[in-house]
Image (cartoon, rainbow over all chains, first blue to last red):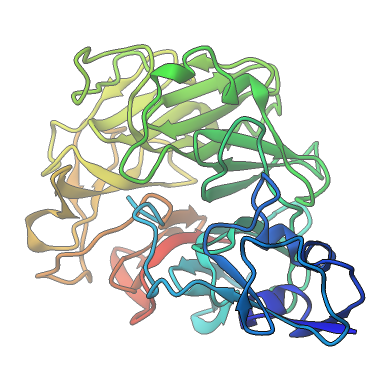
Length: 92
Length: 341
């Protein structure tokens, strides 16, 4: 089974589970089956702008249809953005 | 009865229960608003994350565990932050409203699990004349007449105040005599930058708003507005407004220097109170720090039977205790929202 690892915020939103096993045929299917899929996909079916995904260490953000090997390790990572906040967040 | 203050911050949700601070919960989320539904006791939180977007969290066990709404989307709009959760009328126990950006009002009829656009407002014929304020085009104020679920108000920055009398099917702009000094036309039908809009719970035809361009009161549910900021306030500009449940003539505001210098006026944390429906205002800041240069955001104030409560961008939470203010918490992350029950 391939494995999908989540960062801590997403793990909490998934009920505290940090890692998921999957027999999905593709990366897209594996991600769509996660209980936090709503948080990583945008309204068009692509990943949200600051969500990155790696398969065995390789950037797969723009290659979601890639087949998943049985022993693949998928890592979901928030893009490094330095803790910046949206200019509007909580703003006046 | 125990008093609870829900403090939404840039770094999670804090609770102050009978003076005892706890939290943070929902770490990693920026909490634009958190409120307890008085009908069933559930907690609802408008949570935003700069990577994962906006969601509504719900807890039925006082914040020990949380569930998340289904994905919030509105066709034709790129969903922005979620700003404000308003429990619906007591006759509609599963209904809630959600203010969001850009200029979105949503409704849930399943206790916050799914949300759908209130099309009568979201697709209002004046929408093309709405603009985004500095905080985005946020729908931040949702007020429901306790006497009727059909009668509601919404405040959107910078679109103005809107009213429905048919449960949200149709909406009317109610901005008469409310200034928009930043527009070529100073008193347009829409485009006003309402910063916070409240109705008085015991006298719901009486509305108050702190606007980008003044403080206003309406005694006819928004048909007409009277400007109130020339009589004792150091500035017409500010964000929060707080009321007194037992006296509809009392209100509190916290003026800022102005739109170009958004910090509390005159180098102090100055709360100003009116006891005559806005005819005059007096500084009412016993216990508050001076000098101080801080900010109180539009959602960072509330009130209950015991009086007003507010929080600052400097991480303090203040509550009125008799005639003076007491600091309930300090050194929190920047406070974005305060609710009290």
